[in-house]
Amino acid sequence: MKKARDVIGLPVICVETGKQVGSAKDLLLNEGWEVESVLLEAGHWFSEATCIERKDVIAMGDDAVTIAAEQAVRPLNPSSACRALLFGERKLKGLPVITVNGQQLGVIEDVYLEADRGIKVIGYELTEGFISDLTEGRRWLPMPDAVKVGDDALIVPVHASEALQEIFGPKEE
Image 1 (cartoon, rainbow, N blue to C red):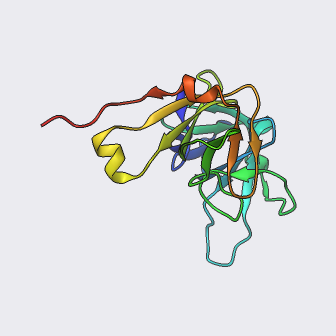
Image 2: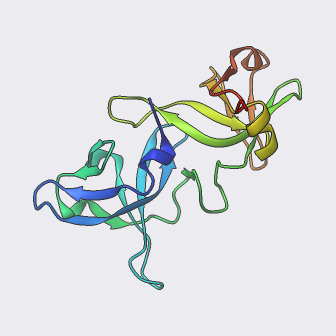
C-alpha cells in the first residue's frame, strides 16, 4: 500500500515519447473511493486545469506516474462530483472522521491506496494535530464497510473505532 501523498508531486511521463507532460498536483476520488483522475500542476497562472483520467494511467509507481500517450492529458471537468485530497472546496484533507454515535476518531491527513495500481482507497491516515502526532503518533483506519461523506465530516460506523491502528509511535528521547 502507498500513501496518496507519495503520488502527489511525481512527474507524469508518457511511455510512447518519454516526455514529461506534467506533475501530479492532486488526486480526485469518486464516490466509490477510487482515483478518478490525477490533477496536473498548472503550467501558467491563467492556464486551464488539466488532468489524466484513471483509464489512461498505466501505473502510479514509486518514481513516476506513467501514461500511454500525451493525448491522455485533458481539461478538467469542473462539474465533476469527485473530491480532491488536498485542494478545492470539497477536499478530504482536514475533514473530521466521526462515528455514528458522535465519537471523533481524528482528522483526515492522507489516504492509503492499494499496492498494485494504486487506484482503490483502502484506508485513511488520521491525525489529532501536530502535538498529538509527536506524542501519540498518527493512526490508520482501514476502509469501513459504510462511509458517508458530508460537507463537514466523514461519518463511519460505530465499530470503526475498534479498527484504528497506530501507524508510528511517538518519538523517543
